[in-house]
Image 1: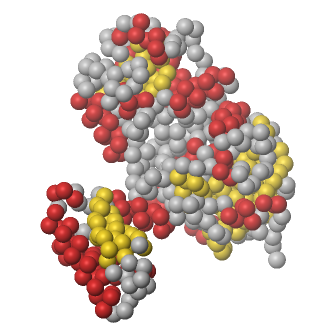
Image 2: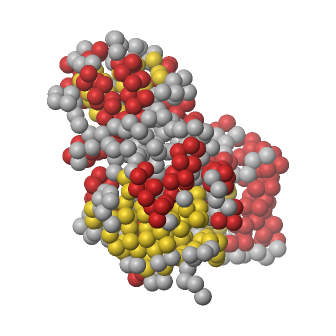
Image 3: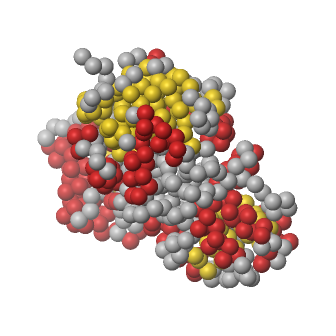
Length: 553
């Protein structure tokens, strides 16, 4: 029986973010990426979402390496949580390693992490796997694809990529190496599907630089630019344009400050002399000589731009005449927060430019259809598996592969936790492993489960009632109360008649329990909840969470 290579996605399929792919052959495992996702609108109080890595924890002795394709949060953000239980050598390019070290220091894990630098074109071994990093273009320097030599054949894992013939401070994607691999023979290709629905080619980053120059030229106002802090190429262009037009640049927002510090130290950003000034010193310059690079492109509450809009920033208040440039697209799920921020900025008298009204203010770091097809044509894989995207992205990408001559039975659309079994002659879906999402709330990892989340949703939608009463310990007679406390349901002072009806109902329920010789407090609480729930739904068509509290005297 032919030995099988197992590929197990633990994140990044059917979703954008939380990327983690396991490659397993016999007694060896390598992990490619370990990213986080961000909570949707129904995950009240949740900070981040990470993959369930129970399978890795059970096979810890097999893990030979963790390999990172680039330094974005959706590819490295879950590592501080993974490393609390699993410690394996981590391979990353220079900027990715530097960003990871900073992240691990915040979690007090930097001393235990075994981070090893890898270079494009230089292969290394991890168990039975041979790994060759290949340079690709993306919105952050140091991004790589991986050519993974396995006992059953070569697998190409693209990571996030685009084909940019005029990149910023970087070489063009190494298409030559992909072509060489294709000529030698590639068994399987796993490819980025984020922009699989977008026709044509993605635009070059330099288009944004050209548009930024137009916005800076002859502008007599203060210019404030917000973008993703991880978009190092964009930040470089803003700094260059500001310096060209004689503006001093202030940097604000913790993640932006950290990214620019690290990228500058690594040589990924060049800052012209005397361009960056402290935020506190910007007030010493005329408004037409000031540019600010800030966080807040997603409308995040408490981001630097958000605080500026509410006049809560220590150094900058948005005012009439300011030109605010949002050089980013809204991440799915953030559209409302971004729209709210834009409206707020406009109400403060600012001129706001964003992608919906100026599509040259942002370009994607992901390949569109013609680029995806080009890479398939170069690599010529026998089998194909789309990754990194929602179902619609994955299926569109699979259809593109079919149009390039890859047979449908040679294409697999996987799912989180579903094993993909690959031999030299076949690819198919196998069984499943434990998988899913783990919710992180503050310092709690996984203690917010489906029940807690359901309760939070219930509270957010319908509010809560607390019924407090004191009973005699001997005969369960009512000594005091019931008192009704409402949070998020009704305002007690304005709902006197409703509160009185609820109190009477609780008293009647207690009397009914007494008549039926019900003395168990758990049963009494259930009776109170049932009676109140039925009454309130009939009266208000609402179903608040009801918490009876019985005190014994």
